[in-house]
Structure formats: structure tokens, C-alpha cells
Length: 71
Image (tube, rainbow, N blue to C red; front, side, top):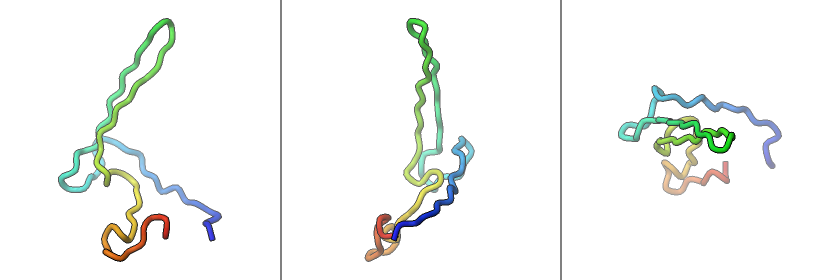
């Protein structure tokens, strides 16, 4: 039975956040561009898979654990 409620536990990402030892630190760069009167921003991010708020499935640590779909 699917959940009827969700709680957003997401934390904002920033360059001083904790990362898994050995992973690349989070970084974000942005560049504002303009052409023919139109302005837009391009962004680039570098981060490891364990950066920020995320969910690890039981399979991540238990050989016979379930995947994220089973949670």
C-alpha cells in the first residue's frame, strides 16, 4: 500500500557540507549569459553519490537486503 503522506527531510546543499570520506566535496558554479537580449544562467555541480540527503536501500549494506522499491 503506497504512503499517503510524505515528509521532506531534504537539507540545502552548500560547499561546507559533510561528505563521505574520500568523496569529492560538493561544489557549484554558475555563469550568467546574455545573447540577443535574453539572459539565462548555466550551473555546474560536482558531488559524490553520498552527498546530501539520500536514501540507501537495505541492499546497500546487506547482501540479501531489499532495494529502494521494497521500502
